[in-house]
Length: 204
Image (cartoon, rainbow, N blue to C red; front, top):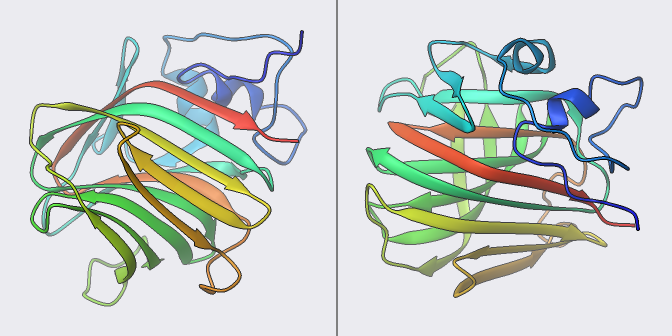
């Protein structure tokens, strides 16, 4: 039986191959070392680090902590993980990063919403207008610090599905919403966020 799920921090090993995308694997991998992470992700170790099986991001209101994969997501994929925003108010999954443009899928405590939006990220600037972006769709949800949330994202046939705890859902068409249809994966935080149990599935 073909195993499609790649365990947390497993896919840095997978994407180290000659393949240009994060793809399926016939074997599940587990790693606990930071060396493969450093070789396959673009990030500042002061902003994102690996402690055992937990990926920890540290940013601030004036400088967001960002980690970005070096290789692309497949055309159709599913991402599952658990996140805990231990400090501040924003955790964001950056989808289909293409140059400075990406899809914003995020949890925002100040507005108490999950959001899909159109984002811009300039890694050389923290100026307003050179990071973040507009909200296209949002759904109310109660969000708190120091609480684990299960996040599921699916992109299939240019349709994006985003859910938290299998209770709050958002959906949109990438094409109709003029969102990036291909690119890399990233995570962003304006405080401290912890990620565990990350799996990435290439949907065929």
